[in-house]
Length: 334
Ligand code: KG4
Ligand code: ZN
Image (cartoon, rainbow, N blue to C red; front, side, top):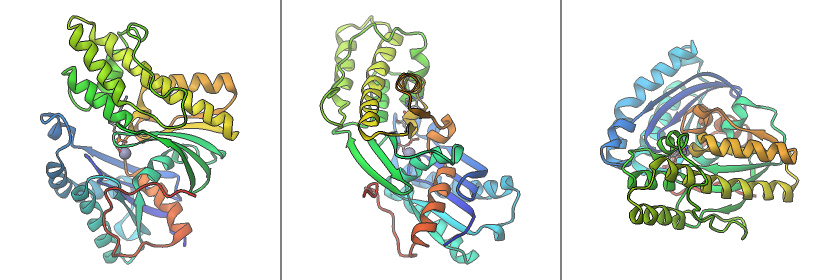
């Protein structure tokens, strides 16, 4: 089924976002209203606070996305919303609103997997990406090494056995008293730190395709406890280096093994400067194409939801209106 002008809606965590995307690639508008300040005082996302904020923010954000796209409501041809994984109350706000809009405008509703949406962020900026593609999907809730064989066809080689990479950034930052969310703060602080100052462990660096970050997080916490005078930028840079090392080493091995055309980053942690730099370096050394979506497309947004929705609608048609939120949804694999 084909519908080109898609309204995307994203409410899975702490960003309320709406976007209009044409043909799965042409971003006409992308509005993201972050709730970071609401949650910062609690040191993390409070689900009930997030749901309430989505209820208040969603319709103004949708209205702004439609205005910025320079179109009228009746020109929307389908409505796509994230239905999982994420916080159940937060997801329900987006899914219910999207179904209501689809019914009123008499257009298809498309339920979108948030992880698939992150993978499609890359195609917004580079529609002709060659496959197979090895994608490192690193967000606040997920860390996986994925081979994308073709559109909508994935193999998950490995995933984290404990903390997600973003979760490790957030927990380390919280322990250092740096604030929330930790990833961007550690990224900034690391500029003034020495990444070789402390030799933090690279867990499972050589075994298999899975990852483990909770030992690294504990090692950082123990190091700071034993050395209270340690330079915080050195800790930040050394921790960041350890995360980037394991992610990039495994991605490089995977790309060699599957004969990938390129390597790609996806998810909020893909905004990390050092991770981007290291991935680029190995791509230059090994001759893979590197693809790094812009930072705004790495973190949660609705353009990626509209893009994934466009592909899903073409392949599977509209989603039934009885689809509910699925907080623990996984990536569909072949
Ligand atoms: O994809 P995302 O926006 O939301 C989820 O789906 O989880 O990812 C959020 C995660 C947070 O853990 C945040 O700390 C991390 O991405 N993050 C970063 C950076 N920017 C965001 N981590 C490291 N470096 C960054 N520059
Ligand atoms: Zn996300």
